[in-house]
Length: 179
Length: 174
Image (cartoon, rainbow over all chains, first blue to last red):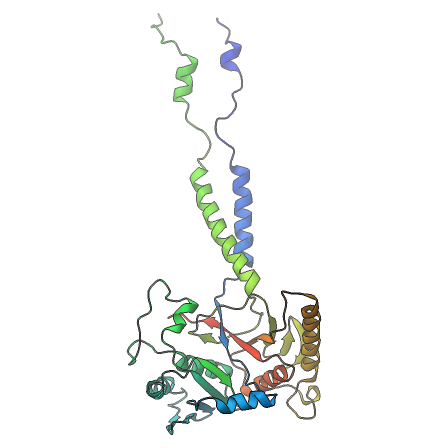
């Protein structure tokens, strides 16, 4: 019988890469990241506190400015009271447990149509009003929504991005009063 | 009698050998893609914002992203924290009177802590060209808290020159 040659019987090195250990590393990393990466989409609302004029120059400059449209929303336990320097005033009562955010939005759209350059608004919440209601009031006042007169379509490439907020500004510059 | 057997060469043997191991290459591709996706998200979230535990933020339709770096003021149902340090307890949805100044609005320990942060920031400002005290503060507050407690917190921030108040919320899906 012929003895197998050393050439055919020798150990051959594997042609493929051994990926098992790399797979282990990647799988471990993945689970680690999945556990600790709390992907929570957090957003920010600017609500700078009103600045008190500290110098005579600042007081003079404030007086020289053109008369602005001042809009104040008082958030009370029983609903909203909206006042504006243009003379319009409205009380929007709560319907059951809900605040009338849609009615408020429509009223603010009507106010803004008269002076579209103004975007300032002051919110004065009552002591017993919760934070969620304050934020929802800010949302109702921030921008025009589809169907409002004056609504402009946002280009799709910037939709959902911070730049899109320049398109349909209503009363987007919020100050918190009553502090 | 045995038939004539075909000669088995090294070349033919090699041709018919089926791979015995699992083909992991495509799976590795998928995992690597997921890994890069997670790494990208992980770095974004970690450098910008961490939502405190036990806090239920309100939802908002705004799309403004959080600032890269700022002081974080957290108001939960149980405590007021500044940059992760608990300063004052919250009892029955309000600040206990013993933690308030004589005006019944200023939160003493919070005011002291904010003053320290302001001094530190101004000290760095004098020695650095890039850093400046902006008075920016991000407030994370529980959505069920009433304004009576929030106004004390906001007022205290205001009198210590942290007037650039930013309110954190969760992005509401359209």
